[in-house]
Image 1: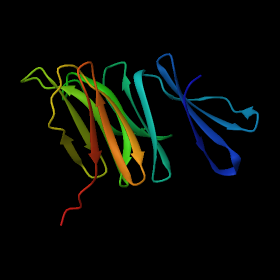
Image 2: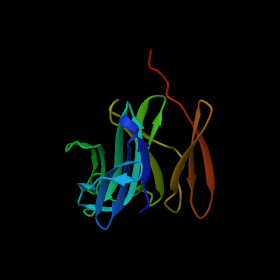
Image 3: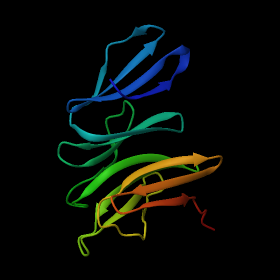
Length: 170
């Protein structure tokens, strides 16, 4: 059982992990574990999760090939990227940049046949397309050095490192 563990109040820990077509949450304390709670039953792949404003948010690709973002234990979808909107989407990853929740994913440009990286910031109602195009869908990951956040896009041809920041509008 692989997943991410988060510290909670009272010395408890929350474990978020995928199973076959499902996503579970389990509460752990000491050597004890509560029964798993079924969060989703339409999971296909790509579980990504982060803490944002003291809540756990997670994204995944559904069996209907939609990218979904939800807040833990809430039914409503914060974001839903359907195949009609973006037919070929890959590697969704959630992150927090300067206190902004962001969903990054690779998508195919229907005009050129090449791949781009798109970022959605649901709380700010913004979306951004990175300008670089790729022949193959890039995998997306992040790392942080002190206050700086970096995006890594990597495919069979190249690896690119991007420094990310949020410019406040005047």
